[in-house]
Image (cartoon, rainbow, N blue to C red; front, top):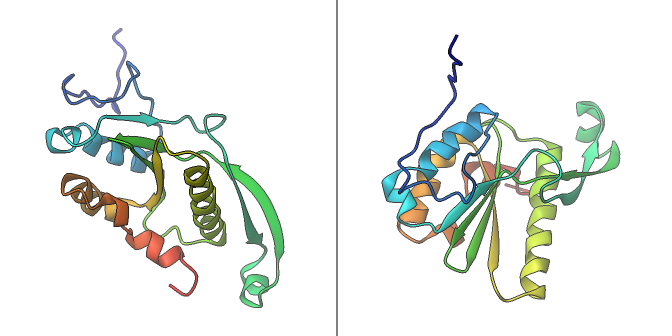
Length: 171
């Protein structure tokens, strides 16, 4: 009996810019994002990309307010510390785009914490070294098309996704 792989994306080898022979992408939103990475128009504008594993690849520490909806509405709850691994790293010349993928409606206290502390983390990394400049991006499927357009037209440094705008304090 032959093995069946319903979620395999086969890419033209000239547009596959990942240094690994295979990229394992287990979540639907991440697969949707990866399909863009192997399109000719996108691949021509990036040098390399890598999909990190879910745990143990590159952890970013963050804090957020945890509690019930009622306690959080009253500015209550308790502070919780955690770590996350950004989903993708994309290299364009001396720039590294660090991308976390979520669902379109994934506006939560935890994701607000991830955005806030990941930005601080990569700003600190940029201060400590000059070889590459890192930009953290928080995306959902509604943002994929416009994000990849920003790569094609070189405006990715200033790109702000709809999800990021919703996750920002007072935004």
